[in-house]
Length: 101
Image 1 (cartoon, rainbow, N blue to C red):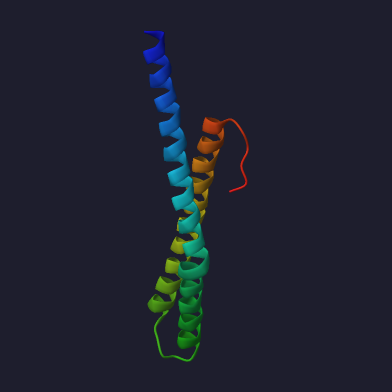
Image 2: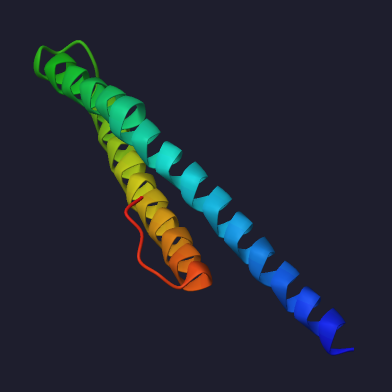
């Protein structure tokens, strides 16, 4: 009986480690994707919309939309960072030590 309880606890801990590691690894990739792709593209789009509005080639709503999109991407980036850090904290709790991930 005790042996089966021990095995069940061991399996649960291993599952927590694997799950937390997978979430942390995926979160790290998503954060990198925001930093290398999404945010720079949204920033360039916003800058282009500003120049287009200043030259009279586009309307104010287009400018506002590009600014809103940039803000949304920044917010999503911060959410991705938060989810990555939560997964990393879960992993550290599961293994019982701090990690440099």
